[in-house]
Amino acid sequence: MTKSALMILAGAVVMTTACTLGPSWEKPQMEVPAAFRGAGISKSNMSDLPWQAVMRDRNLQALLNDVFAHNRSMEALRHNVEAARQYVTIARAPMFPGLGYAATASGGVNSAGGATFVDTDNASTKSGMAGVTASWEIDLWGKLRRGVESAEASAQEAQEELNNLRISLMRQVANGYLQLIMLDEQLRITRNSVESYSDTLKLFNDQLKEGVVDLLQVSSAKGALAAAQAEAPALEMQIAALENTLSMLAGRTPGRIARSGSLKAYMNASRVAAGIPADVLNRRPDIRAKEQALRAANAEVGVAIASYFPSVNITGAGGFAFPNLKRSVDGWGIGADLSGPIFQAGKLTANERAKKENFLAAKAEYEQAVLNALAEVSSTLTQRRKLRDVIRQQEAAVAAYERTVSLAKQRYKEGYSAYFEVLDNQRHLFPAQKQLANYRYQYAACIPTLYTQLGGGWQK
Image 1 (spheres, rainbow, N blue to C red):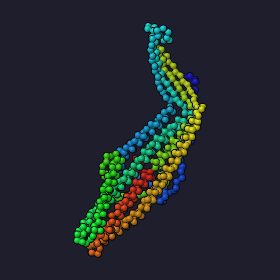
Image 2 (image 1 turned 180 degrees about the vertical axis):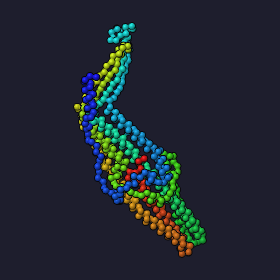
Image 3 (image 1 turned 180 degrees about the horizontal axis):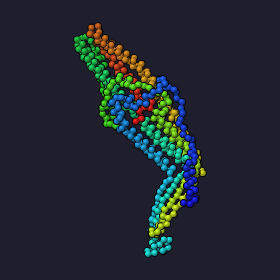
Image 4 (image 1 turned 45 degrees about the vertical axis):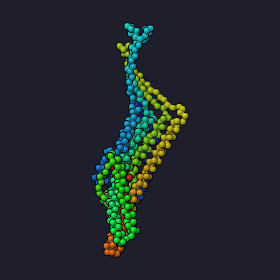
């Protein structure tokens, strides 16, 4: 190898350690409160727990395991993550020398016999060559390194999007499972009301024949019964639709969802510890995804700045030539070329400005994600605290209505009042019982909601 070739290679090695243009990445800093609104400062955090320790129902765990294994949206994102990782390899490849090969062969007849290489027996020409080529773009300004940084951040963003989908599905499925239990409870109450109203109507019809009551009481009983009978299929329709949705999310065909337990048992199944707001920034995958998007946008600014400067390429070739396919001649060569922009009609400047605007947009989206997370957690904590009072009052209301119905029945048996008084009080009792089931569902659903809002559940 000649002295000039050695100098070219030595210069290339030196230039690969040259500067990296563009702003260096710094993790965004954002002020957050010391504690969530609606909660005090807590050192423990329920998102540290594995999801099985928070959602301990065996049927729910089996359903969630099917979701994680067979949900088609998660499967699609897994492929997106793998594709993003391949783009990192694609972005990194130009940082290394590229090798190629070339080979040719040709033949023909020179009737004049004036070719450079002539087979004197038949005045034909036969020649060929084979060789290896090499090229290497020297990352003098860090353009390639910034490109790799952007690709790596995008790959990590794709992974965080998958993690975010995982906990979003966990929250949706867990809340849907609890909602099924609520609908079962409301359906049970509705069927009880249908049975009770049917008995009342039968009693009133018998009393109408005896002249004890008039058509007003009978019509009132018919209306209460018809309304209750209409509610039952409506609830059954909601149950079937929700079961079909949960089956779809679990990658199953539509069918019944196995479930057990009562809402009252789920209400205090897990202790709530929210930690501190700063934890959310590191735990929630949606915030982590926005952070990686911001990192990628920051690296793209560096790529745009490096585009102002010239690029340097080292090229080389070596091989053999076969003038007459009987003897060979070897050779090699190495060189360098430099190219750069002179006039681009504002293209490079506009590109840099666009990348900076993209960075600022990504920064705003990151900050919005943080604010959204803090608001979600605070709202759920407040909802859970207030629902305790709501449930306590609603339980008192249900107990009072049950006592009233019992007293009305006793008064009727003792002849102090008509049975219409029982019917009137039942009209208050049954709706209050269904509303209590709804409040208990909302309170129980705060557990999976808060757990995922704090960033729990995506770790395997």
